[in-house]
Image 1 (tube, rainbow, N blue to C red):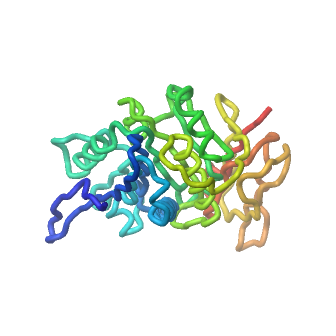
Image 2: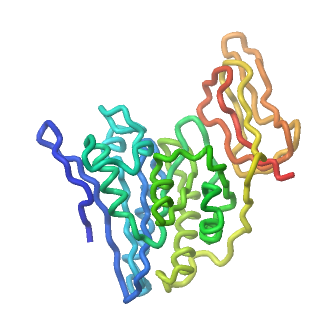
Length: 309
């Protein structure tokens, strides 16, 4: 059942609409919500929503509970391929929990939070931005570690990053929901403005595994086993920044182990035909972020490495 969550008049006889698809079956009371599209340039969640909805509707007899799918929290951003809300110069994931008496965007954020409250689990799916490629990962506030890490492991994602409380912005959807007692996991994967089909299918398999653990889904497992995830916590992440400006060339992808001194790529000068800098790993570890957009400036983030030692 398609239901409108937010409906607001726009100036030129148009409407700002946020909608969800409610899929209900059996007598189960558990409720899982899948939200995405908070940033208009993050598109992997669109395929994930499609695949989850399609699989449930093909086998409705296995559903025992409610799955609510919100594919576009920022529909204007998706329509215009803009990260924030067009014309408001706002990052939607920086205005939660919103304000019922505020601007249009703040009212929408408030309504979204109120609509999601009380769910047994919320999955907040993001892609990276245009500049960085991320290996699939779950990000968790250290304050919610005990309650959320077990659920995160059910998603079958190989990397879990537990952030210090000081690094988590309070105005995000996930923080606002977790603060009210509604558990919310943040999933990040891929790169902005693109859809990695393989990553999306792996996440869909993990979502159905989580649904089985919750008792919401009683169909056969879509994947028989998942790897034990790498759990990153504390000051064990190395950030690599460019020491010069230029064009970054690399053939590496994320999700690989690297050794100290390995060359991740080179920064080159196309005019002079020279290598300006080699980007080398400072430590042994797991490469979970790498630069995707090749134009770099001095100080640009090039990679993140989980130092497993």
